[in-house]
Image 1 (cartoon, one colour):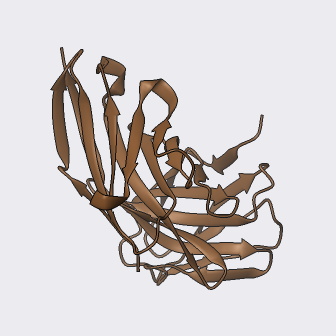
Image 2 (cartoon, rainbow over the protein chains, first blue to last red):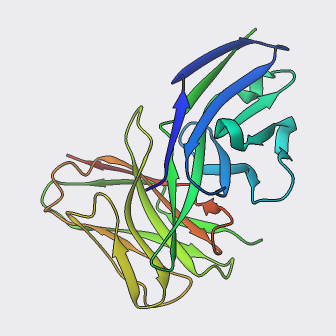
Length: 115
Length: 111
């Protein structure tokens, strides 16, 4: 079965600094990979997705992620953090099981942006 | 506007009562999902459905029930058998494996 590991349940960065949120997946074949953002008391919003096209994926709000098969990683980055980026971020992978797609989520990383 | 709606946003119930959470989508997605989220934890899958009149148990289905009579609707009932029902409930839909779209969530408090 697929699994996703997010390193670091809490990450703090200064405003204007680089954001790096780590995600590693376990899969013998390249999966579909996703990053979501969740603000307090809201649903999850899709930031970006990798579906076997370009390995560098650009998403909303200036975020991007690079699929690295050799490292089984899909880390999320943003060159310059903004106060509005403070939220919880989830990495996910899709897995097909008996004709149905399920999504396996990491445990999340809470990003704090310091003024 | 296409999207997923969940109602109500906040729900309060007494222990021992069943309660039904609504989830509607107009994205024409085949698959729909229910997740539970507890403070500081990730998402745990309760039930999912690929097509009308068919659904499967997720990782924590005990104490919950669902129906899928229409493509657009996937209501979740939290029964009195659920030992710890207070949580944030999220509904999602997807087309194939290309990512999920989530509703705004329902916060259920049972006292």
